[in-house]
Amino acid sequence: MKKLMRILLVIAALTLVLSTAVGCSKKEETTDKPSSSQTTPESKPLESKPLESGESEAPKYDDATKQKLDEICAKGKELYDAKKYAEAKKVLKTALDIDPLFVPALELLSVACNFSVDYENSVKYSDAIIEANPNDSKGYYYKGLAFKAWKKLEDSIKWFTKATEINPKDTWSYYGIATIYADTNRKEPALEFLKKAIDTNPKEVKKTALAQDFHWQDFYNDPDFIALTK
Image 1 (cartoon, rainbow, N blue to C red):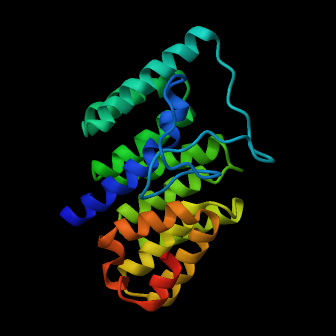
Image 2 (cartoon, rainbow, N blue to C red):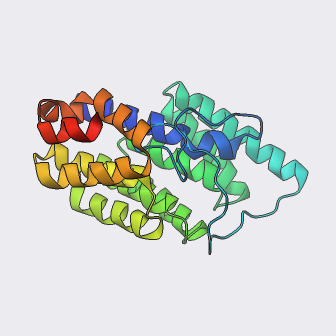
Image 3 (cartoon, rainbow, N blue to C red):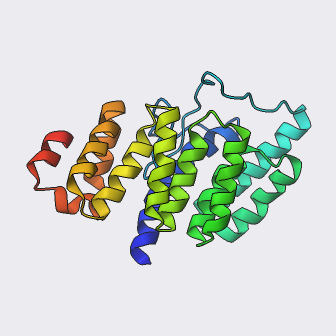
């Protein structure tokens, strides 16, 4: 359990800071690991990205409603960052009373549920993200992350794969698959998907892989891993 929580912290820290930092607060800057689409499952917050073909636009709110949603989400993220997950979830759910498909709150809720060992609700919130934007890879990524935390690894691979089918540059879904294979001692597919992640975001993926010894320690002396991450 300690190892799982350690992995999740890195994942969510990287990821969650992800789009929530962007979506929840108009004033907050995105964090330090942007990719064209998202930062990492084991990485950081999402950079705001332009709508992709077929992606639905965000609902239009009046100024007062938008301000309220931003305030709720900013408070929820503050609690999340302080690792007060139960309190964060309580706050963030009030955003869903206003809009049940408010994606920034759903993202934080999904990952906070992983830390609360509440995997069924993590999947539920990721499904709501998919409902809000079915042509965006983000919801499928969060669903893959939820199943990874739940240790339902084949389901995790399924949803990470779906994310990459929608967005072939979804760096951190490739990376999520790679770490599953690394954690289960399957070298060839681990390096195959690590390469796919590196091909979309070389600097950040190499940096992340070299820092995450809990996934890659057994690979550090492997010539193929060294060649990929040099």
